[in-house]
Image (cartoon, protein in one colour):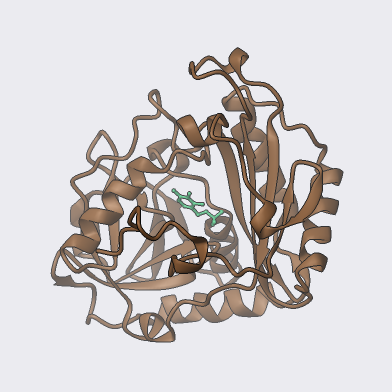
Length: 305
Ligand SMILES: *Cc1c(COP(=O)(O)O)cnc(C)c1O
């Protein structure tokens, strides 16, 4: 266990402490990371009340910026959260934060909006001043080995939130549903969890969308199946169609996973990552398949355009 004990509360003793040179956009200004603190009364902290986007920077450009901003505003609208900046201002603030951190090539941006400081009650009219926070850092690349061998997954017993409870289409700061599923996977030595929805259909991984390949065609659940409408998912679907690969948004069962010829996950951080084992069953021949490899190559070519 790597708990941070009361005896060692200093940031410098925390093995997961942020890089002390980071500059953070907080509210209206860019501040050094040690000054980038939010109130203990911020409803983002107290209740997970807020929205976010994880965004890639390739060659100094924000990847699919419009789609990320659209989704951020849609998530905020669903939660009745007023984002205190325009799209143009958010864009400018992201580029300023990149510049302050010397990110001219590849990087990763975490853009979030919290409900802001309020009273202890949960009511949204008891919190004022939603706050924008932007973290821009070099991307910590996943171990290349994982891309070669593929992820080992379990189907989680943690059901994806019911859309009438908290819609999985909202990219909110409340990630507990996904965190519990990830824990379950890691506890049994698996890399990742595949979550089912309340109908028992395949939804998604804990922070990535899922695709299966069967007889050379691509299948992925539609957003109405309790799935976050991933931007990487959309790019990969378009790239597949460009190659003449049929793409179907269709309801999938656990059984469809087991009998898939190939399986992979997509997301901003992971990009395209093969899934080669699910519940101890090898997927296909247990190695990343040809369509997965092709779409990975196509994604790499597309993102660097
Ligand atoms: C962000 C996220 C994804 C992936 O979406 P991208 O836009 O491709 O990064 C998938 N599932 C969940 C639960 C997510 O939060």
